[in-house]
Length: 206
Image (cartoon, rainbow, N blue to C red):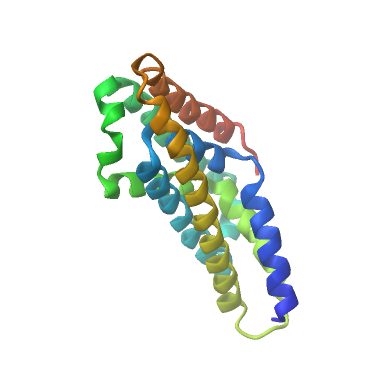
């Protein structure tokens, strides 16, 4: 794999990560509603989920989702159910005090939430199945290893960009959360994002 190929892959990855989409919009709303720390930890969890999709692409497991409607829908609706659960949980626990103390949330829970959200989206698996092999010659040696390497690069650049988004959106959130009349509405915003992601995923097709 040449340096020019790696640079082209990195440029394409950065462009795809920066482009407005459900993932970076979710990190943005997390930063605004909960602060820097929860946004960054959640973002790292989401990016860690890339390791699962990359492994699936490298060893052909993602082909199962592509070829089997049952497998695709099973993963898809598991993701929909989880997102709806998060939306309901957010509204159930809604209090201004929790909002102001959200920065002290359990890191493991925040990381796990982001990880599960990413893993339970079969569209991400199929994206990596289509995206990563483009940068690996079919006749090259150690194709799975090269795909894993590209997935690792994608994961690292995604973590950096999402963390930057979370950091600066957290600054906005810190300012807004000093105003209780505004702060109390941000859990509704978070729940709305979860719900819209669930609808988007439910309507996804192979």
